[in-house]
Image 1 (cartoon, rainbow, N blue to C red):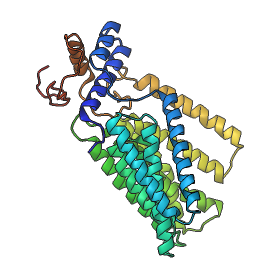
Image 2: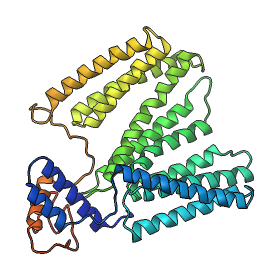
Image 3: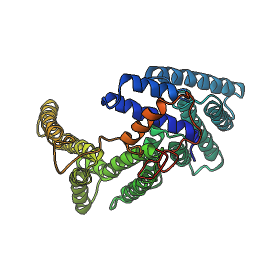
Image 4: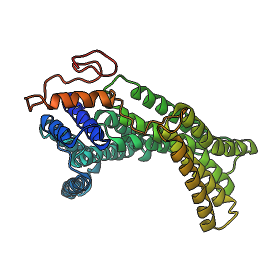
Length: 381
């Protein structure tokens, strides 16, 4: 289930593909203008600075209202006030999305995140008041993680997708503290990250048009980073003397720290997924930083310069050798995760539709086997 109307998302996708075709000089300026006139943007989505401004304004209003309510009750019912603010935020979010067609306008983004924070905070405070052994962090992480997971796919929110692995990790660290002769929390975190990667990949493989794929992509990337950090963080702890582990766990953690970035690089090349190549390079940077933090073979500045040069040389090689059309073996996806029909097919349809007499969007606009074909399916166009 997606909170935004499907017809509006289809038109938004059509406009994005037309813009991409225009940037690649596949269509003329006149054709691009005609497409935009024939299919006006159905959503209110300001540009970046407008989105930031609306978000800050919404945050100020929400925080001011919460502060006034807390002062009225003399901060004695903070949990109940936070839950009330959560319901109010979600109600306002629904109204802006359904009645005002807001789509990542800054207002709906901030209402979503403040609502989740209010709900998790209120529930955590009430749980701590009624069950003394629970604490605040565990219920906060459970509720926030669940709401972020739902929000990522219902409201197509990338930040929510990124925060799911983080809240899950915080919960496990709180529930399973470090043990002297084992790494139970690290194993549980790694298992959860693998489950999240599997879920994200399953979401991305859904039939086109798959508007949840972008959130699934960011969830997969965040979980992949969390999978690497599950045992990499233990290397830093072990070698800095802040925790004790057996020699077996010590060797395993170091092997994990070095092997995972290499596996990401290999997976990226074999599957032609540039995102994993980037993660692999990021992991290599983490290896260098870990060595520098613990062993400190050279000064920090020297290590940064050396590894920066290595990264620049590696990136230059990848760009010039494996760029699309330059290699007979590799042709990488530029990194877009939205699973839509072939841009050329949709651009051709858009050009055709834009030259029709009507200037209103047709009903039941479907991509991926709908009225206009797409995805290899036969259709009217």
